[in-house]
Length: 243
Image (tube, rainbow, N blue to C red; front, side, top):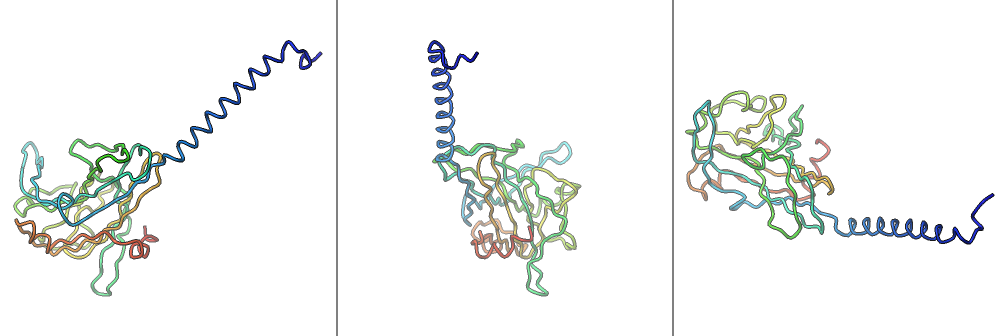
């Protein structure tokens, strides 16, 4: 016979219901808090230090360490939301090359997304805290011509059809899968960078790079021969389907 009508068990049922109700309320509060404290990733770039700056770079060639001047290009990653963005990673997703014969940007075929380097330690991901200092993420570098002779081997791959001894823009990639190109000859290029997080929406940026191939020790002169512009949404929307 059922004990549901027995008054002695009513306190047990009341306790069970109250426990379930409080657990449901706590879970709902967690959902609301997560919704209100959602992180929002943003990628920024300005053609000025420290996003574009002259520095010294170290290269390991065999057992020898080579140090020389170069110009670095960094992206700024910020969290403009309300909650911590966990496991943030930056990828180079696609490359377009400007074809001067027909005035069109054409995507490099068979290019796979690859991680961009954050630091010399090989860090793959970081957390971004709201209202904290933004983080600078490596995109590319241009080495002094005297260093170019050391930058050879399987880790340095030209784009298809590249010719000449021009100084390249070296994409600062953490990995080198499938011998994908990571050097850009003089010309016009567009790069798509995507930033991912465990708990935030992906952020995308399109960067228009125009490079003459001329090296200058002076930073202001170098800015005249290497121009990097963050494209506005309208311009980048014409490229996104190719990615």
